[in-house]
Amino acid sequence: MQYRRYGDKIAVRLDRGEEIICSLERLCADEKIGFAWVCAIGAVGSFTVGVFSPEKKTYSSNSFSGDYEIVSLGGNVTRKDGGPYIHLHASFASADGSVAGGHLNRAVVSATCEMVLDVACGEVGRRFSDEVGLNLFDF
View 1 (cartoon, rainbow, N blue to C red):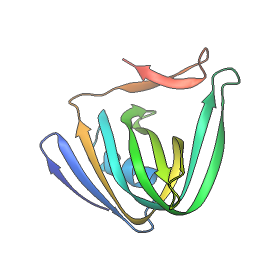
View 2 (view 1 turned 90 degrees about the vertical axis):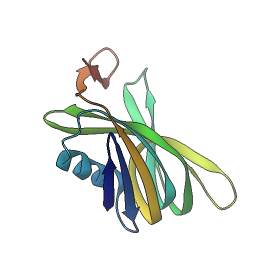
View 3 (view 1 turned 30 degrees about the horizontal axis):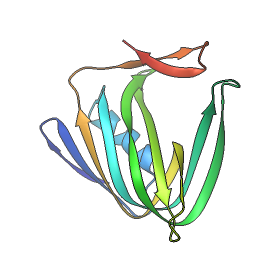
């Protein structure tokens, strides 16, 4: 991973074999980021995405491998239990144009991933909601 900070923006390049969420967690811990918006494009060779069921309060997950373009990847960075909390959603397209996506659990870069973080001054925390079954923004 390589990155450069430009004021409140951070440009990030992830290389082949790097896992997106782990890399982002490391960057946010090193840079002490308390709240940021994430946007990225690139290519992955494997990924796992999930969909949350509010009724069951659980995620169902699907894993994929092959050649995929990141059509869209967005989300945020907040804080929970003293460390970065990464919440991303993504869509990935295969060679035939079919798209799969959802809540990003894991994605390994196959070529590159170009990411921009828009860092805010301050911090947003997370608190688990028994009612919803998710870690929600905690102001």
